[in-house]
Image: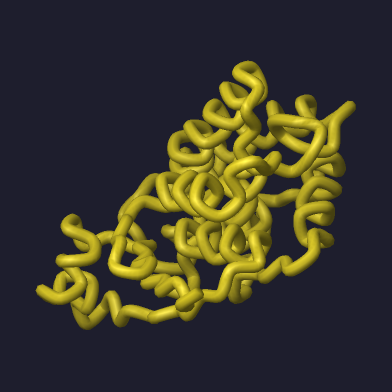
Amino acid sequence: MKPIKLYRTPKSGHCHRVELMLALLGLPYETIDLDMAAGAHKAPDFLKVSPFGLVPAIEDDGYTLADSNAILVYLVKTYAPDSDWLPADPKVAAEVQRWLTIAADNVYSGPCAARLVTLFGAPLNHEAAIAKAHALFKVMEAHLADRNWLAADVITAADVACFSYIAHAPEGGVDLAPYPNLRAWIARVEAEPNFVGMVASPVPELA
């Protein structure tokens, strides 16, 4: 099997969730880091892979795909079709989809947005992003009070989709100390065989 090409920027949680899925599935892959500041994501060759110029994107034996959650689905359906990563049971599958949506919405507008401000100077409302992160974490803290994983009795693509920005929330100024269940969930993901972490960035002083 040829290595799957992963076009990324190393500090992106969207990119990391794809790399984490690749690693957890034990798939061979190579990372291609794009110089976003220099406009590499808008180069004609890359636009053939990702028409909107977004990372992450993959190239798998001639097949190209962008959008992190779509890539998670593709990887599991292609290389682990009968696994628990995307369960067949309709109710559990719906739970996984619900958390994929939460990753694209609440996680993005909360801990991801807060981190975009502190790491990249994004012109976003930092206080609002932190407030959204805490609102999300309070729900997740209660959800994880009597369960180990987000959508099922085992780890699924839902956990992979949500993990990166939540684990690195302190880099955006969001304190994880009040959420022991959430921190235990982070530790469980990190204990998975073949786990690969995202590059760490400085943590600002928390108010």
